Length: 277
Image 1: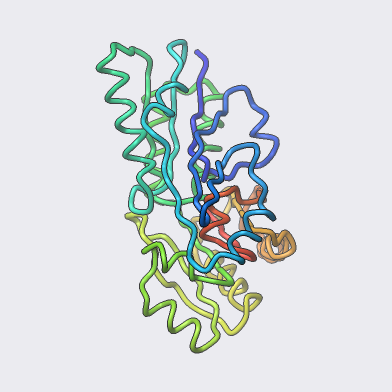
Image 2: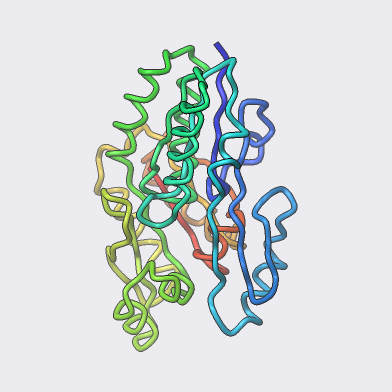
C-alpha cells in the first residue's frame, strides 16, 4: 500500500526528501506589517529576515484551515500528518478537525495526526521516521505506535541570537527575555515532554552555548546510534560546527542538516540553530 506524508510547513525537511512523491506540505502564513507571506515553495528567507528587521513589532503567524489538510488526503493509501507542537500552534487542532470532517463525509482511508510536541528539526525527525517505516512496508497501526513512542522520547534543543519574536508571541516568559538582554547571555532552550519551551542552560556567546548543547547530547547515552537533525536560520556554518562537534564525540550514526522555512525563521530568527534527536 502507498502512503502520504502530510507535513505542516514548519517541518523543515532536507531538500532530497522534499522531492519525494509521498511528501506534501500544508502552508502556514506569516504577517509582517501589511505583508502576508505564504510559507510554501515561494518563500524567500532573506526577504523575510529583511522585513522582520525593518518592522517594529513581531510577525504574526496563522495555521492552515482544516480544509487545507483535507484536500491532501488520499483514499488509496495511508495518510500520516505531522504538525507543530499543539502547545505552540493551532496547526495540530486544524489537522485533527480535518480528520473529523473527513470521517463525517465518509472517508475510509487510514489517517493519523502526530503532535510532534516540537517544531522544525523535531518535526523533521518525526517525518523521517514515518518515511523509514512506511518504506519498509510497516503496517499503519504499527507505524503509529512506533512513532508516537519515539515522540515521547525525542529531545529538542535550540540556541537563538534573539528571543524577541518568541517572547512577543507569547512563546517565552518575559523574565527569560529580560535576563538574556540584560546580561547579554545566550540561552540554551529545549522542549518539555508536553511540547512547551524551557530553559536548559546559558553561555556568554553563541559558540559557547552551542558547545553546551553538544555536551547535553553527550550526557544522553540513549542518543548513541540514532539520527540527529539540525536546522538553522541563515547560519550554515553554525550548523556545521554542531555537526563537527557531534561527530568528534561519535554520538550519532546519521546527521542531517536543513534550512528553516518561513515559520521556523520567524521564531528562530537570524542565526538560530535547532537540534532534535
